[in-house]
Amino acid sequence: DAGVTQSPTHLIKTRGQQVTLRCSPKSGHDTVSWYQQALGQGPQFIFQYYEEEERQRGNFPDRFSGHQFPNYSSELNVNALLLGDSALYLCASSQTSGGHQETQYFGPGTRLLVL
Amino acid sequence: GNSVTQMEGPVTLSEEAFLTINCTYTATGYPSLFWYVQYPGEGLQLLLKATKADDKGSNKGFEATYRKETTSFHLEKGSVQVSDSAVYFCALGRANFGNEKLTFGTGTRLTIIP
Image (cartoon, rainbow over all chains, first blue to last red):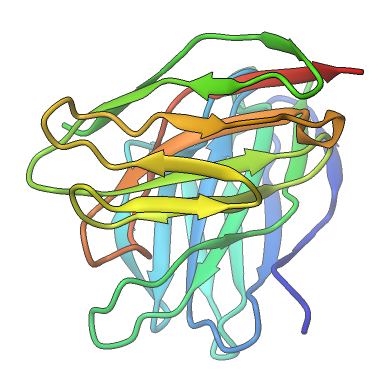
């Protein structure tokens, strides 16, 4: 059973560019969350997608947007990149089922470097 | 708002030593509490969790008890191994909604020397 997968593993961009990161959830999961982990820090919640809609959002600007596809996979888009966007971007998947608590499983992350 | 405060690292121990990593939290209501571990070059893995006061989560020799009175969830292991070297994150989430947003601490880097 494949776990959460993310692509690409590494990415280098320059300021002002746009980037798209991809995530495939664990089999059977329908909910995808994205987190940003700056160097030496804990992950910060960006947003969560369920049923192809943004369900929750953290304190991130509109430059950060996302999408969820019918097969539950997801993309994270960041426009007008800033140096401060350099971080490890983590995707986590889980199952939303009748409000019961379900654990989030994390992917290996995409490391983004903005020059 | 919710917040998690973790013991600052890095922490260096000899193999077979006793480990404690402190974690305290601030939250409205009664959150669920988690410990995640991040090995070098990898994503986060759930180590253990507790969903209500006085619950003890345990896995791979690690334990943590949900203490409501002290708002704490300290991680302990009786005898650490070199393979336990990693970064450990304490996190909280809304009770009974474990797949909603998690609030993480800053992490504690643990190094075990043979």
